[in-house]
Image (tube, rainbow, N blue to C red; front, side):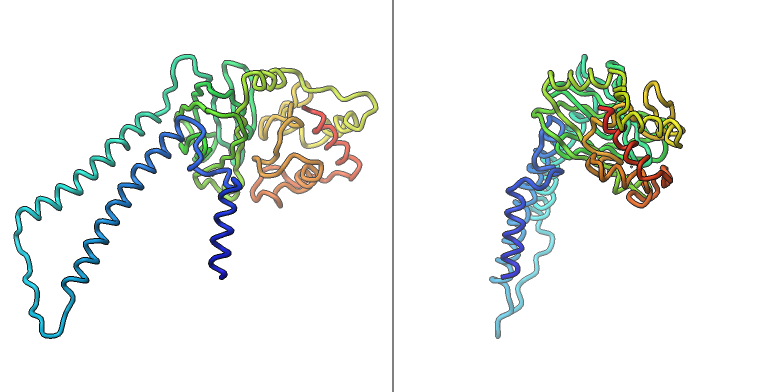
Length: 327
Ligand code: CUA
């Protein structure tokens, strides 16, 4: 009964789309190629399994020891058999190798001319995205237009990371001093989850990311928003008090807010209020998580470089109001 319930649970969760990182629900040419390759090889493996098990069962049934029966005659040097069982696996391997090589070349990372270029830089433990042709940057959350060829050039600022968005493409390593590439074209809008797929230290498991694939107009709106100067808080608002707190706190040593601070250690916060998540896409961007994050980041994300901040409750409220106003 317990097993039935467990299976039922698995079945139901699979139906409700609770696996946002499933490689079996591809939404780009890259991931469709990989899923197709998997299906192809899976059926070859099924055929081999069924055939071998069938032979095994036949042998067990036909040649099992019976009282009084003579020993079966062993076969030696049967040329036809030897050639047969050498050729058959070789042929199967060819049927696996050819589509595999094809997939390797198809996903080698060269987008067609005119593709949108994105540079991905891995940090311990967050993602930096630069759009050199649009002259904007983003952090942890990558925004992309749908049905547009994307050229992703990736490198690392420190150790080796790996960019992986199972439903769109990857995984490919980010290595300091070299550029690895992937290219893909997302075929439907939506929010896709990803994560670092190469062990990179204490918070490797907390180095997550989101990709928002948007219609052209929604993407353009987002680009315009990122290009705009950060919002100036209204006179006398809590956000304005928060900006003053920000200016006199340690924040400015590590973070950039255009026109306010130019720190380069952590992510740029010029538009942090417009993000869905914080801390390497680890937590939703809410008042509560911002409070907890500012007070003690390393307790939420082991190894995080931002030390616990000693701010009064009033200053913290103001600071959070300010960050949230930076859409
Ligand atoms: Cu970055 Cu694991």
